[in-house]
Length: 88
Image (tube, rainbow, N blue to C red; front, side, top):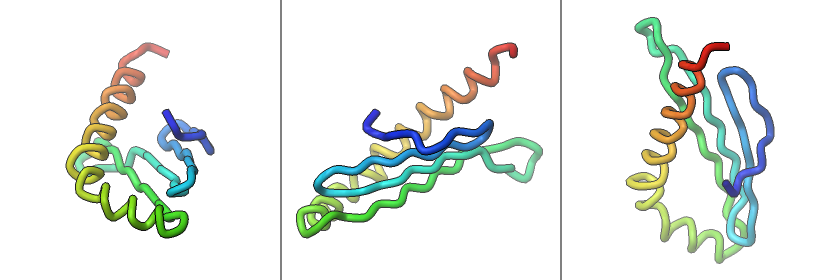
């Protein structure tokens, strides 16, 4: 994974990545769903680096929302559920 962990708690995780085009931070956590359970919530904060970064971010925008984020959330959700299913 290209992200460097910043912190990890029982119900949230944050990591960052940086390269020539962008500097980004991703935060993932479990939040109450209002029905007694929880759901995953993800925030991604990205700052473009220079003109190349701005052009890159504009070009990949549709792919992030249709492919990358949904797949990432499913993968993380499965891992979290598998971790919860294991006896302590």
